[in-house]
Length: 81
Image 1 (cartoon, rainbow, N blue to C red):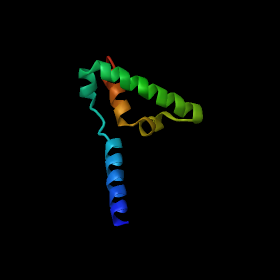
Image 2: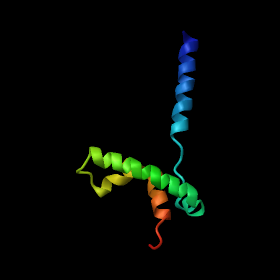
Image 3: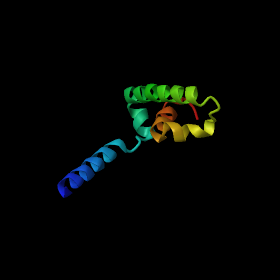
């Protein structure tokens, strides 16, 4: 019984650590345009789904909904500041 609990705890730790990848920096996305495009596409789908379910969504909710990684990819793609 203790072995099963320990095994489940280890498995849960591995799964949660794999899901909590650190967001990539704006600089990373500036230097990796293909990765930036893939992330922007992924974030666009995520945003579309969110707005479809929450039509009253506000701009201030975007970073919370999309996450820092999406915001960094978007920032890296801006041609002017």
